Image 1 (cartoon, rainbow, N blue to C red):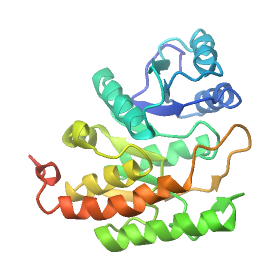
Image 2: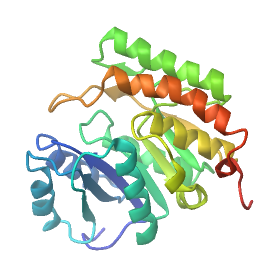
Image 3: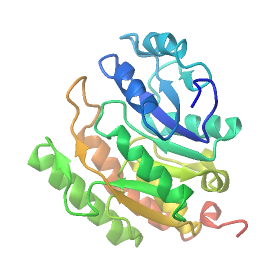
Image 4: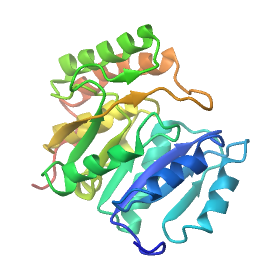
Length: 252
């Protein structure tokens, strides 16, 4: 594929202080046989992450894009901005992915395939669909994440084993149907809210097994308050779904 021919698939990578990883993750995505474009959404990283991306744009004109924001505004708002950017640019598939190689770039291919060829509307890169496929996490964190997802399934009724997963492919029609301006949560509960909204709107969600590897370089942004938001927020989501019109599909 030529470097300036656009793909139909956009990989969104939110960044804050990812200078150790960003160049390598960009190269890894562009080396895949299946073509993907990249949008880096940088929240004014003081370590110069955006400048590294700008240098890489010279090598990948038209395929590597940068959306700079004035400061840290939350993971959810970064992805919402990316969704809107991807829709405006005409992409058919929009994929969330971390910058730190916890998500293997090679898994982008089966995620896209699930939507493009196998009938899924949302494809989730799942750590828990075939057991617990997490590497180098402390056991306490594994248990917290696993049982948080089980709790979300119980409350919401979603048949998704990895409800907090951040490696997700959305078809364009899903993002066009969801009222993105009414997505409430900004932290990792954002991931639950997006899946729950798609589920309530009747879209087909499938899980694709992946192996999640804890970051080697850079600093994790995970903390216990993130899980707290997810645990308490899911009750709010369930209750609001009884009355909130955003969960009513306008057309079939």
